[in-house]
Structure formats: structure tokens, C-alpha cells
Length: 343
Image (cartoon, rainbow, N blue to C red; front, side, top):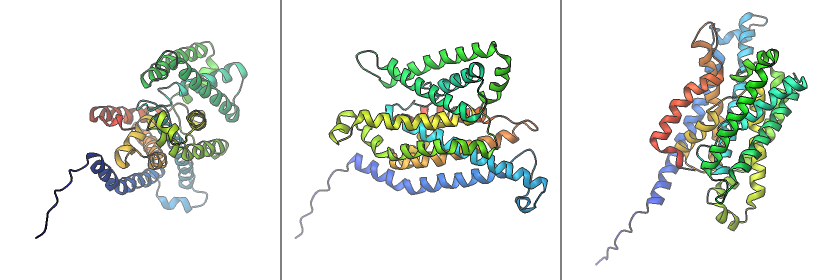
């Protein structure tokens, strides 16, 4: 006679973890597939159709167009990947689903510093504007965190967003005021402000070391962010030095968002929406979220840039506008689905 033991009740947490593990591989495949499609679309789409074989036709007009689009695709990949990676780090660092370099004032700080450098210092080269963007983004991050930390509860997610919104409004007003008094600076700033993907390999070469260091620091911080997601007390119990960890990851965010903003101008929604989309596909572990955010952010920015070339021919719509067009519906969808709480 066999004795049947009663089945143990199902563990909801274990069942949910099994579901997440089951969808990781399809999620990774989907993101890499979209990245491939984005690369092809970014090279082939434009005001004029050019066959891919023209790339090997030396000295032809078609070869020049394709080489221009390849450089543009590389810059879009670098900018989109950096912004999405910076957004994912910032959301984990602050445990705030609304954290984004734009919402927390980093982009506005970088833009204000660039305008000051253009108008009052006379800086015009990308290398000098790059340092101005770094300083502006870093000071904005310190100021937002300092303002949000005032009070008994410290820098809560809601206070960080409010402080970021207030600082963004103030810096945007000061930026506009400076530009209204300097029409030459306004003309230079106008194109940069809406986010314009260029095609100069030299600009990418100047920014590449900063982006590489920022990405390396961010990716090395994946386990740090996983520990911080458990709360500061548990993270300290696991041996983490939370203060130092936050400084290192914060430097990575400043390098990524400051460099990307200096390269093409403020580009919204990539850093906010992409990490949530990646988490919905592969789960909350930052070991996967961070590298896949690079791929998904690169794909979104390249697709937005390619669509901007064909949506209103013969003119082009800047990538900063197109990412907002794509990002707002996605943002509303995530809010309605309640997907923005799973940090």
C-alpha cells in the first residue's frame, strides 16, 4: 500500500520567478532581432532609395549616401544605448521608476552649461562643449539630490522627481533667457536642442572614450543595483558600501547622459521607457537589464532617426522629436499596465 503525501501548496513567488526565467530567452532574441532590423532600416531608409550594392560602387553618389547613413547609425546606436543604460542605472540607483536623466534635471543641466559655454566662454568645439555638459549634468545631479534630501524622510522617489522637475523648469527658463539676448548662440543652439543625429565619425571618436568608461562602470554596477533593490539595510548586510556604490554608479550616469547630450542634444524618453520595456521582457535582474537596455535603446533611437527621415519628405524630423512621438504612447501604456513598479 502506498501512502500519498499531500501536494505542497504552490509558491506564488517561485511560480512568478519560473515565468520570468521562461521568457528570458525569447525576450533576448526579440531585442537582438529588433536591433538587427533597426540597423538595416537605418542604413536603407531615407529621402532617396539607394540599393545596398551601391556601397561597393567606388566614388558613386549612392556609396556616399550609404557611408553617411552608416556613420549616422553608429552615432544613433551610441547615443540611444548610452541614454537607456543611464536611465536603467538611475532607476535602480534611486529605486524610482520615473527616474530618467531628463526628468531628474541632468539633460537641462547639461544644456544650460553648454549654452553658458557657447555664449560667455566662446566655446564651439565638441571637446570643450563635452566638458561643459559633464559639469552641468554633474552639478544638476548633486543639486537635485541635495534638495530632495532636505527633510525627515530624505531623498524619496517622489521628492527626487519634484526636485528634478523644479530644477529643469528653472534651468530651461535661464537657458531661454540667455539665448534671447544672444541671437548667434540661439542659432547654434536651436538645432542642438531638438536632438539631431550627425554623421561625423570624428565627433563619435571624441565621445567614444567617455561613453566606454561610463558603460563599463555601469555594467560593473549590475550586482550593486541588484543589492540596492533589496533596500539599503539589506545591501549593507550583504557587505555593500552603499554610499561609495552610489557615487560610482552616479559617475557612470553623468558620463553616459552628459556625453550623449553633448553629442546630439537632449533626447527624451529613451532613458525612461526602454528599461521598463526590457524588464517586462526579461525580468528585473540588472545583470540582464543593463546590457539589454543598451541594445533596446540603440534600436529605438536608430528607428526613430530613420522614421524622421521619411515621415515628412523632403525635410527631416529630428530624433529628439521622434523619440517623444514614440515614447509618449509607450509611457502611457506602461502606466496603464502597472509595469513601472517592478524595480
